[in-house]
Amino acid sequence: MPTRGLAAIDQSDVRSAYRRWAPVYDHTFGKFVEAAARTVTARANCFSGRLLEAGVGTGLALPHYGPNLGVTGIDLSPDMLERARERVSKRGQGNVEALLEMDAMALEFADASFDVAVAMFVMTVVPDPARVMHELARVTKPGGKVLICNHFSVEDGFRGAVERRLSRYAARLGWRPEFPVETVLVSDRLELVSRTPVKPFGFFTLLEFRRLT
Ligand SMILES: C[S@@+](CC[C@H](N)C(=O)[O-])C[C@H]1O[C@@H](n2cnc3c(N)ncnc32)[C@H](O)[C@@H]1O
Image (cartoon, rainbow, N blue to C red; front, side, top):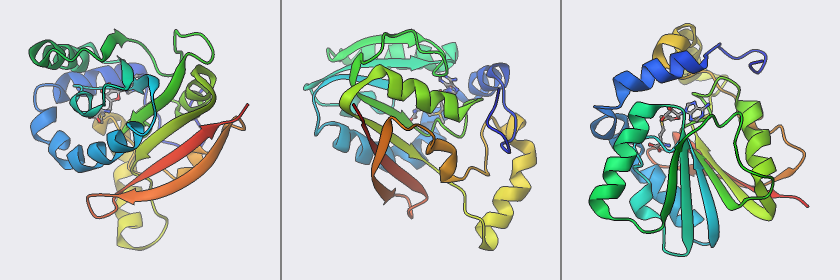
C-alpha cells in the first residue's frame, strides 16, 4: 500500500521508466547528481564492513566506495543493473560483492546483514518509500548507518508551486516531484543524526540515520 498523500507509482512504472532512462542516464540525470553522489560515498567511506546500496541504478557511485566497504547493490530495473554490471566488469572493482535484481520494499536479506545502507535519489521513485525505510532499518545492524540522499519538496514559493504542478505526471516521470521529508521519517528504529544540504545548490539533502538497538 503506497504512502498516503503521495502520487501513485508502481513497480511496472519504475521498470518501464528506467528501461527508457538506462541508455541515457549517465549523460543526463547522472551528470546532475554526480557531485551529490560523491558527497554520499565520502560519508559512507567513514565506515567499514558490508554496505548495501538500494536502487544502485547504473552503478554511478560504485567506483567511489573505498576498499574498507564490501558493496552489494540491488535494483528493480534489469536495464539499469545491466549497465552497473558492465561498469564493474570494465573497471574490475573487487569490493563490489553482488549486483542483484531485487525490490527495496522486500529485501531478501536477513535482519542486521549490513553495517551501512545507502539509497541515493531513490526514495522519490519507489512505490512505497515508508516500506523501504522499514526494510533498510531491518537489514542494518544496530549501531549501523542509513544514508538517504534525496530531493525533498518545499511547501512555499515558486519551487513549491512547480513541484505541486508536476506531481500529476509522477507515474509518467517515474518519480514524485512533491515529496516532503516526513515521508522518510517513519521508522522508530532509526534516529536522525544529521541533515545536510548537498550540491547542486542544496537541491538534495543527505539524511544520516543511526540504527537503534
Ligand atoms: C534516479 S535512479 C538513481 C540510481 C542511483 N542510485 C544513482 O545514484 O545514480 C533511481 C533508481 O531506483 C530504482 N528503483 C526504483 N524503485 C525501486 C525498488 N522498489 N527497488 C529497487 N530499486 C528501485 C530504479 O530502478 C532506478 O535505478
